[in-house]
Image (cartoon, rainbow, N blue to C red; front, side, top):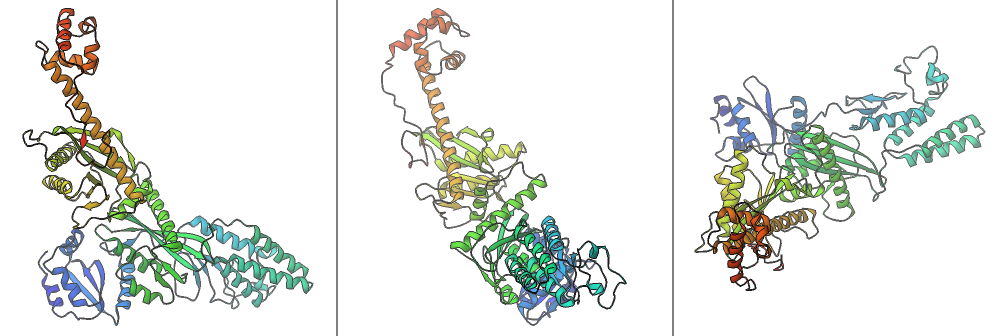
Length: 628
């Protein structure tokens, strides 16, 4: 870490041991990072401690020239102050919501005697009711148009009743407003209508239908048929209108369900709004500046910066996983209960929210031309299960195959977005085999991994997002050594062992097991089986070539060029034996006489003798039948 600047060193000596917020600043006074602390003194001093820091933190501290601290009474207040300061300064090293200032709200000015309904992008503490923010502007416009069609809300900007026009506007004459400005509509009637607008925007359409029906019946009984007809028309619109935001019926309750997806430096968080057992809509945010941040920090930053500031919260908030500041968020939310469901219908809602987040993130990546096609859901599941920051859109899988210590080969298969990409398949003959002592599976794996990645680096080809080797800890260690020698330690590396299907992750002491029906496990098994098939096929091919070559080597006068011509033309020793001298004489370098002599020499060998060759067996495929 850089040396502590003198100005900061003097501040560190007098830091209080209380909750608060700290601001790291550059030499020109720009706020680089805002953080909170339960105890300011140890938290701030930890930045200068002799410990490993992430590259992002190292870059931050290299730019820091000044420090400012703010003491607050509690850790919860520190959380809220941190959010406000991040929103004000937008520091480059904090996790930030992308374009969080541009989303519109529908504002109902309940603080006015005659409230108005309009769109705004400014959220003020002025007594008004705000609905949103709407990440789908089209959905917001549809909701606002329905309000204007069903309810006769005034569209003028008069400060009523202190300002009153001399005559009604055009809306009054085309029956889009009932003229409260000329006292054609009473204040009580107008406020009752605004109350129904609020209920409607809150998603409780059934409640609005019930109220309008009651008022229509009351008007009819009072023989106010004109008013009853108006309410009847409004009721028809309510009962038959399209409801594009209502997606499906779910378990009852007032809930907000959070979904999370991440791909490298980009993340997306969605919130599904459930009211009265109906999924009414979806909101989402993209986040930036998350390069080295764990998922728990990213989720916590979103909930503090976005959900805590929301005016429309359910009785229950369902989140996909825990994070450090959850108790503080719970305290700040008050009545809204934060829960992390593990199973049942609530977990299914989390899965639905995460599926939405994945698809939105895919759309964002595709819009940025960062991907050629949409990644399959198992790819996201694999990234989440392994705790990868970047979704493993591309993965390679290595497998070895040998036959009694001979024909030791390796295979490499490439999967792109969960599907095989056969143009990237590779096979290799292992060169470091000691025929005297037999093959060393670990050394073979190390050689194949090293040769494959060395060539990709030299040819400047893209590297995969995940490396998979077939085997256990030994194969994993061998592959890790090869990557370390090439300086590719940042590549995620795992191995898939046989029998129990244990997954060993490089850098973790204990293996992990995924459920048998896990999409992530099925994807790994598919890659492993494809690598095994490729390795065995290549092994058998090499064994066939070696068998034919060894037979022909016994015949005088058949050199490398003639052997190659025979193998190309007839494919096997049986094919050569079945050929006629004339057929062989048609090959370059052969005559009828030479062909007859060669066939005579072959016929003196016993073609029915059993072969001593063993079938190709992968070093890690004892769980497969021998004929595979």
